[in-house]
Amino acid sequence: MGAIYFHIPFCKRLCGYCDFVRSVKSRFMPQTVEAMHRELEQQAGFLKDRKIRTIYFGGGTPSLLHPSEIERFIEHARALFDCSETEEITLEANPDDITESYAEALAQTSVNRVSMGVQSFDDNCLQFMGRRHSAEGAKMAIERLRRAGIENISIDIIFGVDGFGGVSLERTLQQAVETGAEHISAYHLTIEPQTRFGRLLARGEISQVSESTSEQEFLAVHQALTEAGYEHYEVSNFAKKGYRSRHNSSYWTGAEYLGIGPGAHSFNGDTRRWCEQDVEQYVESVEYGSETITDTDALNEYIMVSLRRVEGIDLQYIAERWGAEEAKRVADSTVKFIECGWLVKNGDRIAIPAEKFLISDSVIGELFE
Image (cartoon, rainbow, N blue to C red; front, side, top):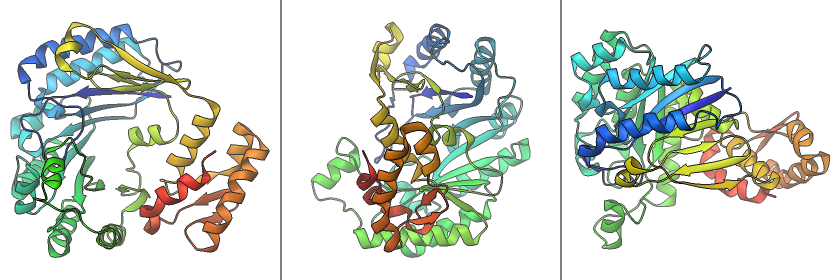
């Protein structure tokens, strides 16, 4: 089964750390929405498997669209694909967009999961990152969704922010748990050169945390959330039982997906494709870049995404898909990491212990073909 991703690139304000495809040119939003409907119609044949398991609205800020527009996209997808077995429809949202009326209208749509960009429950940290909401505003937004009947809520938090570790991070983790969120994504702050934070860093006006601080904060996040009953099932993701993100899991298990909108990516098993990013150009015509996935690419990607997940790699699957010789090569490459405790082996499966996920990149590169 496959997935559909709708990229809504518009934001009221650009956060200092964000390097996603986004735009503050909200005047183009109506034209972009119509262009996305045209693209969905035109690209309906891209997926070989037209059964859709999940639908995801990401951004940008999808909650800038009225719930009726969200439902219109869903209904259009249903007209083009087999959505009879769709399990999860997620909307990313900013807390300050979730008014009482918005939450009630959203509960009348087919959306059954909301992923909210909280980032921190420390108002000073939120102000530093350029967020539009306050800690109290985030809590109120979650309460409004609950009252409206949304029963599956995920929240994002960011750690590794210089000056906001220690007590600040502890408070954020505690309050994240207290919200009762079914899913929590915890991302380490990454500063990219083209962002406002990147420019501030280049001028020496802000700093990045040290490697040892990164490790300490990662372990603090892991410990706080696992002790609260969340499963640490992927490097950045924690879930209560039965509430893993099914859409993101499809990316990590090689499922097909169709991306619609400026900057959206698609994958059909053989080809990875990405859409023209500029909003103004997108509304005029859609252009794509693409690459063919070779067997070596596919193996390396399998190793990469699998070692970021608690299940790890499956040597039997590698043998069946790429041959016994390749499975042996991978197995031999893991021996030194198993001996030092960075990897654990259980039958044909080899995985990184969740508390050591932060070192995954160091291991993954050594196993690549």
